[in-house]
Amino acid sequence: MRTLAPLLVLALALPCSARVSDNPDLLERQTLEAAILLVGPGIVKLPIELTPSAPPGATPGVEGWTSFRADGQGERIFVYTGSPVFRCAEWTLQGPGSHECVLRLASVIVHEAWHFTNGREELGAYGAQMLFLMANHASNAQIASVQIARNRVAASARTAAKTAGTSDSRPR
Image (cartoon, rainbow, N blue to C red; front, side):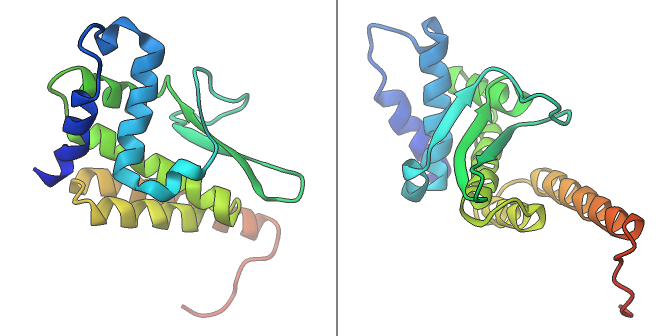
């Protein structure tokens, strides 16, 4: 029951005169807030923006991204409200849905917060995301899906390194 407490608190904080589903912007904001509650208070200070459109050239399945300043520092975190994970988390707040969706959305925020603080390197961001999911008792399927994405990025980096002629030739 511990993991559902933030959702219960959020539901109790809603005004009785208006239903969340009557205001899509409010529902999106509350979906983000539910995910942030799972991540913890340190995230609140980061500039996180909801956006209804993916960036040009985004890979299929994009859920969030971080923009960077010219000096490489994180500038803003974007959460894509059109992604299946965001929509599922929204649905969870409106009725009996899977807490896993809110947890997965929270893990996306952890991933992007890692980028915001540490830079563009993907393997560290995926590592932080998987640790968050494990610490919050996510399903094996959730953790495996992030592991698969991490492995895909690692394979892509190895292929790029080989193509550039900079592959690591040390024995493993």
